[in-house]
Image (cartoon, rainbow, N blue to C red; front, side, top):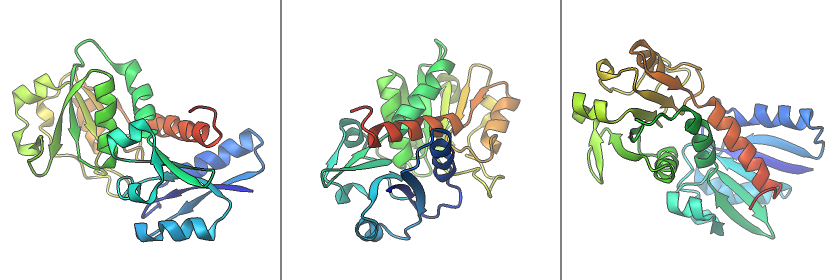
Length: 246
């Protein structure tokens, strides 16, 4: 029996286990299982592999997408450039890190892009944000990173004036604000400056329409949650684990 799974902490919000359970049943895959491994610290990473010799691959979520890298033997080109990993494949005794977030985000964003979508605001600076920045670069979309503290090319939420909002017609929330159960939270952007030219993309998928997206829709903006991105990145992980793609 091959074991695949997800590491992170906590994992109460996990989508992956249900997705793979359904996938295995639908495709009649009987020699694989997918488990959640809520390790409270990255120091438990090595022991996890020792305790589960049948482990062949892992997905990685908050807060380990960046700190897991020193524990790996190799990185894909994209993961190395991004500096964050959300998929690990064990092959020939080597653990290689990949980033399938960038695949999921790119494929789900592209159908929504309009000619005026040339500049983006990326809300947040974590591992997920790094994948989004990489994807935007590949799409030739310039971006500005927004954080609670300025520095290293980032601006603060207070710096978001009408002109900045008008210029940046894509806004991507990579923070956990609005995620269940704290559904009343949202990024503090000036929503009054949003228009029908804007596209709001939230990596959060539970609830399906966060307060961030609701406020955008109220201003006429196009909105998209992270559910399709999750499905696409999970499928990309499976292709890596089963070596259907390089």
